[in-house]
View 1: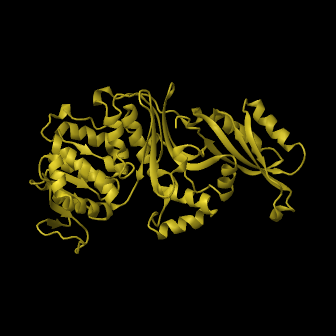
View 2 (view 1 turned 90 degrees about the horizontal axis):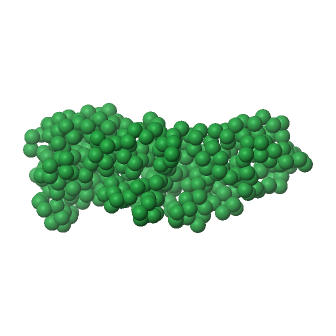
View 3 (view 1 turned 180 degrees about the horizontal axis):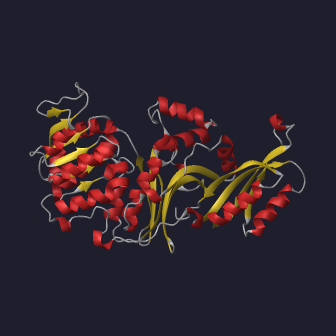
Length: 436
């Protein structure tokens, strides 16, 4: 099978290296040899031995090459990648990509075109790097009705929150280190504001519940507003803050949300540290399963890319309608279940309120919450810090029972209107993830 790779950066280089180094093992698994015959690179001096490989600077030359059977898209981004992939599909070529943004935003169009042309699109590397989570959900759990998924699916954000907790460091300080180490880009917006995780969650939800890809309906909230105080208070309450992607099946529809979340410290996923990823899947037959491993990096991601290439080699002669569907469910059976708006989700809440240090304030706050049927299940009241001795304001941390986001929004608005409350209230959602 002849392969063309577009993009020979970190992942592209790793893919070329793995294909070359493990060529014999791969051919034994695939039942045929897999050979890279062309690469498209920007640099005039690739850092790999490309003897016998056609090197071009035009990615579309790879898509148009009649000898190439599989185009591996590793250039990233939205528009150019979409144009490349659709052109290659129109030329009858199979696609393998690690581009989560491309799949989350343009996947519906790409999969439709691929079905029309009878070609495959592999995207295992688009979610959680080297963790085979797509295959696990799409094939390994195909007998199950999946109820919910909660995942740490961005290593940069997890590294930042881990460092903040373990070393009592501030967000900006850890972010700067993450950039120096290469974990975060110069513009870290996609990582720290949850966009990268939202791309991945969109894909996970589609293959879990058989719904179309709906990135534009995914609620996204980042971690840039998380303070060292909140990390410390969460620890005192027996919780840890993780940046989670959560998708859940409910009577009202499918939840799609990415946000900072307090989870009990005894949960396995609460103990995933550094740049590692983990995805927790809860389904009816098998119960809860946890998938853990590196979510990025040259060879972990290349592992997933090459696995998809092997799948293409194995299934290229299979009739298209008998292949595993791109989104796990056959296209004519995709569900039109609505995506639930954030105001309709139900969970517990962590609230940090800056209040006037005088008698009766807590009673006033309790009254506001009680009027809305919100129970207080835990509380931390701190003494006035030396630096605030003259201000007369103290932080109060509350843990509430489960309530709808709509009711909590109303309660926060009412609390912030109290003269005894200063500034904005910090709100972090709480999930128990009781299954494991």
